[in-house]
Structures are given as C-alpha cells and as structure tokens.
Image 1 (cartoon, rainbow, N blue to C red):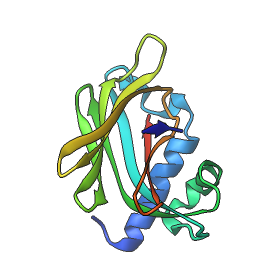
Image 2 (cartoon, rainbow, N blue to C red):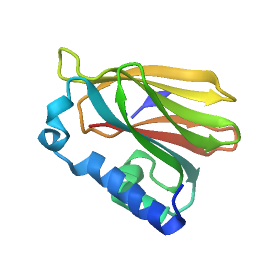
Image 3 (spheres, rainbow, N blue to C red):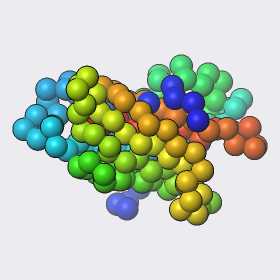
Image 4 (cartoon, rainbow, N blue to C red):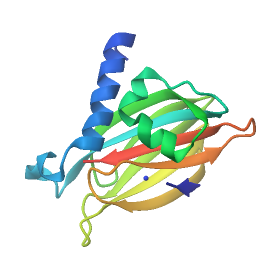
Length: 161
C-alpha cells in the first residue's frame, strides 16, 4: 500500500460533499475541541480511479483538484463513504464492492507530537489483505491506494478531525 493519507441519492450527494469539504477546509480549532483528547470524527471513503478517463463523480467535486493531482488522466467514482465519532480502538469501515472493504481504526486520538494515529486496512471477505499505521495531523485528508488487476486503482481517503 502506498500512502499519498443510506439516504436517498440526492441527500447522499449533499452529505458526501459536506463531509469531504469539512475534512478539507475546517481549521483544527473548530473540530470539537472539548473532547479532542479522547475521540475523533473519522471519515473513510473508497474511490475507484480508472486510467484514461476524464469523468469525475459529482459527489467528489470538493476534492477533485486533489484527486487530479494524485492521479492525472484518471476518472474517479465514489464507491462509499462512512463517518463516525471514534474513541481509541474503534473502527469505521466503507464498502468497496465485491466483498472488499476499507477499515480505519483510531489507535490514538492525539499522540505526543499532536498527530492522530490510525490503522488503515483493506479487507477481502473480512480478512485483512494489506494494512498500514499512519500518523497524521488532525483535519488533514490523506489517501492510500491499491492497484487492481484491470489497471484501475482503489483510493481510500481518510481524515480525522
């Protein structure tokens, strides 16, 4: 793995845009400071990136520039997004289709360096296939990616605020 960090359809588009925008644009001091030492709002989402395509899912508009810089000349489609307030040891997962899922576990809400520690895994039929431990500043969106046999890539976007 390389690190680079059920409402109706209309309601889901708006919810996805707000969650992604909040992760990208909220300053750290606006992200629930009263309990930042013990819990974090963790968001995980899966995207399929297809080479030599120009399309981008409208639900990904808020992060389109980041995606285009990460993988130029690719099209992007959102597979799933989940967001949950976690304490250490809790996990949030999103469906990647075909029995695959992305799971993110909050390991430490805030370490001595002011970073959030997360364990990120890709599972197939609930069996871990690949995983990594990441330390990231709060409110910083990051991506992990995995190549697929058909030439496309699965991007896992993760953020904690």
